[in-house]
Amino acid sequence: MANEMLKLENIIVNLPKETSDEAITRCGRMLVDGGYAERGYVEGMLARDHSFSCGIGNLIAIPHGEKEYKRFVKKAGLVVLTYMDAIDWHGKPVNLVIGIAAQGEEHLDILGNITDNIDTEKDVLDLIGQKSREAIYKMFNGEGAGA
Image (cartoon, rainbow, N blue to C red):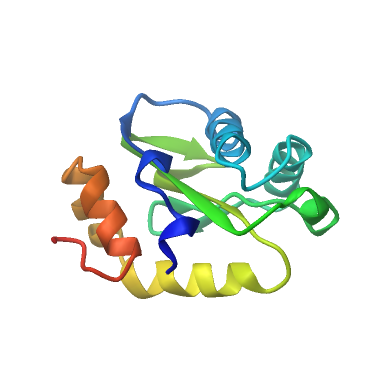
């Protein structure tokens, strides 16, 4: 994954528990602040999760904007948040939140990289248990979770 898509400063570890809407809003603000999207995209991220949960199982949620909000995406990017105490995400526990801004099919490559690297709940817990932004950064850039 291109380093410009995920910057070290866009990874926050060991956050205090918050609601799914708060986590989505945090991701959206980070994407806006990072130059990946305009403010309108945050509304699209919330709308997407409210119409169809962004929780994908294995303690992971991947908030992203609905199709009609893609016009607010400037360039592909992602942000990563970890929570030691699981968030209640529409009735399912989530410890890893990966916010995505992408146009077209770009997000499919991003999602593929995530699922290739994090297959199980144990993978997620091992990753967040390291409490290391650097370990997450390296894993998402193909350098291994334990590097």
